[in-house]
View 1 (cartoon, rainbow, N blue to C red):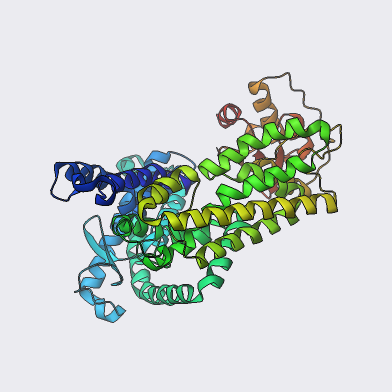
View 2: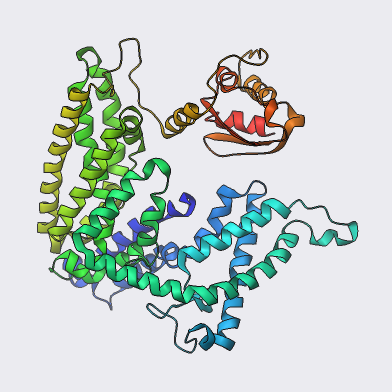
Length: 518
């Protein structure tokens, strides 16, 4: 899912820059709507809107890149065809029997109508949910049927053609199901919008807490995605709606939360920018004297990464692995900071680090909202101190082995997300280092790949293989032939997850994965 999400950063920055140059309060008469200057930047801003206006299609095409086990490019094409087929089928159904499904298809598609225009098709506004469901179904069909052997006289229909043939009938059936149930879902979404908007600070606190506390499970994506990229609290999602409103808000001195109430659910970038400062300082303060230099050399880059880019995993997964209590406290403090900011009127698209947040918030709106931003910075600074004091107290009180407090023979290091998952998996797996038979690894990636292959029972035991950045995913024919985790660790893996025929070799190097996969 992050494949299309990563595109939003640059596009958002460009929208913010263009908004600055089109703002008369900053550029003066040069930015009047009838000037060449304004029209010049209008062209750039419209181009930057590409990813925001085609969010659903981007996710439809992007999902197969990560989930398809073979021929990802073909899977992307198939997903796009299926998505368009689905929407044409929905349009045909509603144009004939819209009243039966409780949909007024005669009205113009737009916000609040339940209808949307996708690739010039007036259809149900299924948003991200429809995109992910259709793309997911297509990937399943692709993985199952792309290599299906057909008689020679049907050879024209092999591969993508066969997948799309099956998908054609599936999409028509799915279109009927969505027409039947989705209007009711839309009513539920509207009710949730009303509830979240009316719940005020309580809703913001719960939302932000869940967004943080669920990070280890990956389920936090299901918390923020409907709000930020879909219509949970504002039509089109917070990110799109905020960018559309920048020009108007840049010309008003009203409170940001009054101008854009939905932005209270996009403040979780503030903990990303400031929490790491207090946490890193606490780690340095509590480190053993002879390890302080090593700790600061680790903390400076990871804190800068969190502050500037909003990437918090390097520091968060370190204390999550060592002391889950600290992570729970971190989630509580993050939610509390966002609620305080919300209560003083803060709103916006604060979903990342300082660079992106500046382009989408501080720079275009500073002239009219600088007082609010200064107040927000002051509040965040207070919370930095709170993070520092609370973490320092808990680390010392509970004698937690945070960076710099390890036993002297242990190395001072950070813990990655992959290492955290591998360690948790290892707790549930056989950790015996006694192999069924000795496997000798002479060295090098080729030797490691050969060792992995042998430990998996040999090539004759492999039914299917694929990979991601951190693991080699294998489907074996006979799970009993797979060696214990210790064999894989001796060969260079960080861990092993084995559930039935599904085996994951954790965090093998990319080049090694390529060799093993081949």
